[in-house]
Image 1: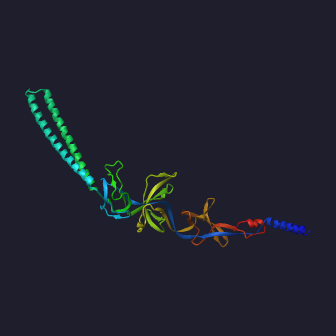
Image 2: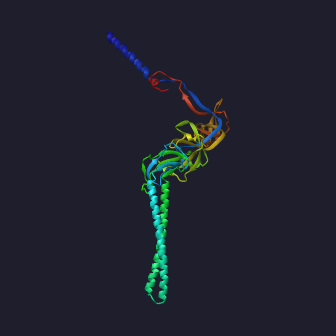
Image 3: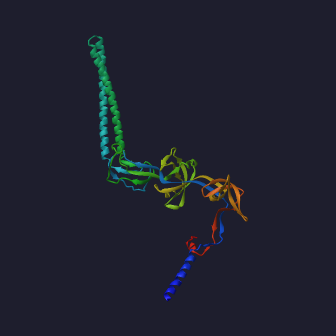
Length: 383
């Protein structure tokens, strides 16, 4: 009997609890909260943002006209070189042999030319004698014609010998240049940013190698740097050489480097189905030596500056029919106030109209519920 009594009491309490949990929640009267902002006066910087890579303005890959074994290369990457400083020395033996051979070829060409000139003079004298004999009726017309042909042939041999002499002189000059280039000098003042060879390595000449020679090192003038960026075609009309820019890199996140637009590519190109234009932004900051080639950089190009203008958050500007305005807040509530919209950077907008600095304007309205009482629905509602 007690068992049945306890079971009945449990069922009654359970049913009552279920009714309480499943009944609709009672909504209490809510309150509307207005999110507002102040009209401020300030400067509006209008920018085009882009990203790119830091690059040396002048970068040269150095090769050698000469070939042979490297006998000295005392510099490493990062070393600063003066212009015309000897950087690499090659074994001069091979190139000296070529100079000697070219000298011998030149002497032979000079001798051939002298011989051709003597032969030409001899054929001229023979032709003169043949003409007199032909006039006297001593020789035939055929013999006279043979003498004329011999003279012309000798004249042609002189021209061939003169051309050969020019060729051998050029070969000697080239051989001397290659001998001179066994001492490779820096073509400009700069820093070695890449070293390709080491002492003891045999390199190929740019003149005799089908692969255009062996690269020795890359030299860059790091005193003048620029960031190569890509600007979308929708923004390129706002960009012009000489505009100021701000440059940041991940290595120095708190530092803004000053820049200036250097040049704009005259022709666009397609990058991932989007037409872009290459824009070079030169780094003009005094601390530009902190930057290094191949650093990723973010660039903001300033294309317009609006100074001392009234500014409001862009989201505060509304459109009602044909009218643009904002909701100004006063003691009685919100008042629709027409404005003239100027430039905007997407966050702040320039306005003019019946507003002044310090006025409060409405951004949005949030309706808050005071709460709900009872029930499962209350338990499941997110606040």
